[in-house]
Image 1 (cartoon, rainbow, N blue to C red):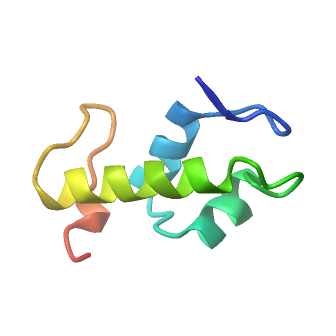
Image 2 (image 1 turned 90 degrees about the vertical axis):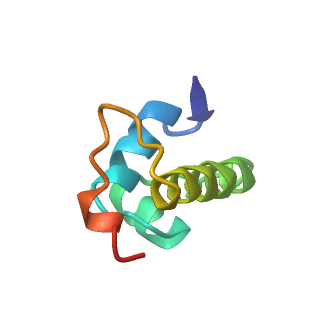
Length: 73
């Protein structure tokens, strides 16, 4: 599903970036250019970020995202 329509960024791309260490909205902006145009998606991106980080902390990780770098969060 597209989260950032302006830059054609999907939820999967966001989750992959988070799994690779992008642990803030600012880092996601730098890496994916998400929420850099109209900004409408910023809230959804933050929710996705929070959900993925909470899942990682609770030990529930998706198979495609190792989260080895997030163990110290």
